[in-house]
Length: 270
Length: 325
Image (tube, rainbow over all chains, first blue to last red; front, side, top):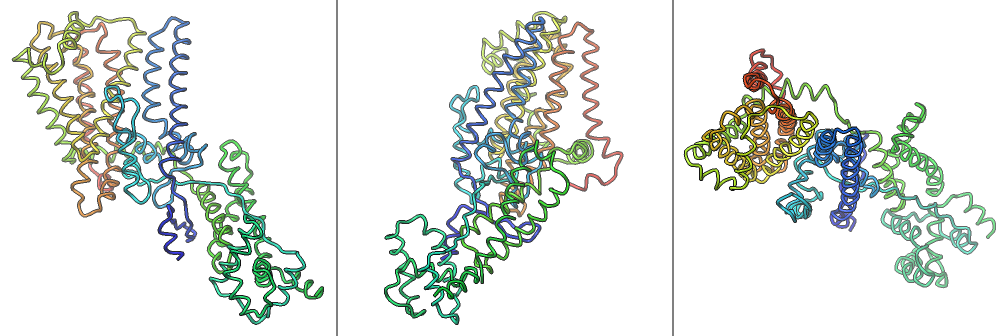
């Protein structure tokens, strides 16, 4: 079951030098499109700002030609090296990628180097095909990039394939609080669970997953969900039939994974 | 098992690592972090790695395992950072490794032969038949070119030179990079772009050579042609290298073959961009200047000698640096 779920997910596993395997979620076309949109807006803004700024500065001192030269050279740099320079100096992120929370890495999970950063952004031109206005090379529709992305396992566009890079999601999730049960009913039943029974691996996992998520459900739905596991457990642990399924699972969790001090307090109270 | 106790003890450490990751991701805050904090960061990272490795044995809840995966991932990215641009390594690549490799690069010679073969054919066509250039370039465009060479280049306002320098970088380097990028499509795109440029340039050359303003034309192009045409051939060859690697995989998988070719092609593109910029400077400041045509011709000859020396000298000086590729 677990294996099947892993194969279906858009995640890659990376083994670090510390010999730890951890998983990254790959960034799909749509989060990357958002980042691209932001970067495109920044680039257009910079291109227009540069043109106006250069024209104003050099125009005032009567050197209009300098303004044109600086503007055109700047446009060339913006068009081909904006992404590459940012990704090299910002550790695989452009402003857009940073806002969206994605990052470029090599396919073995290491940071990219300057060559990879520049090359994958120069090759963007091939991914942008076909252009809506082919004569002037404007408004790439990104069909080549999109179809390349969905035909390989890591959502790599052509530029990524050549450089051996991929884009991953780097989210900052909050950690859930540790579940603790203080309700007297739960503690009472926890104390009644026989000490000679220890949960197996899959049972432990199921309990963990249940306790972690039960907060998201209404009390009726909790009992409905808990019933599937509570029924067989009730027989094994020899608990009476009038214990609600939700309470039973929480008690089992508390008995097996909770802090013993509280358990003892509970048994004293009982 | 007292899992909740373990989790409660680990939580503050994970959260501290999380905060440090955020601090390190910020370039300004990163610089003000004291050394002890950085050391603390790496030990916290190793601790989190160990926790993740033992997550299964501890029976950590799935949400916590997911949290650990992304925490370790973020910390990993802060610890192992991108090596941006190593100027020394680039210098060695461009002036030690690359010239040795280029001289033996069969794809480069293919691109060279193709470009100049087509160029000369097209130039011959343009020379003997005025209609040929008109068909290829378009009548309006050709008239424009003819009129711009009706007078000998005798200098102009310096500010216009600067503006044109920017334009030449923008226009010519973009054409070169197109040649490279479209080579990726099995080399066909690169062949098309290369031959297209060769035919147009050749037709104009041939046509102008036959016209009465041939002297003006050659005076203008003499200075920058060596750099510019070499740069076009170089970027075309770099693109073909990518494209052909998809067809001739030499036993690698197609993606691996492409990746290896990408690593070899990138320095060639870098050199081509440098040559385009150099050509643009000559074209903007020397070619139109009011100096003797002899000087412009010697600039052209000088750049050609430079290129030949770049390709040949490192092999003559010999040492095995080229073997490292």
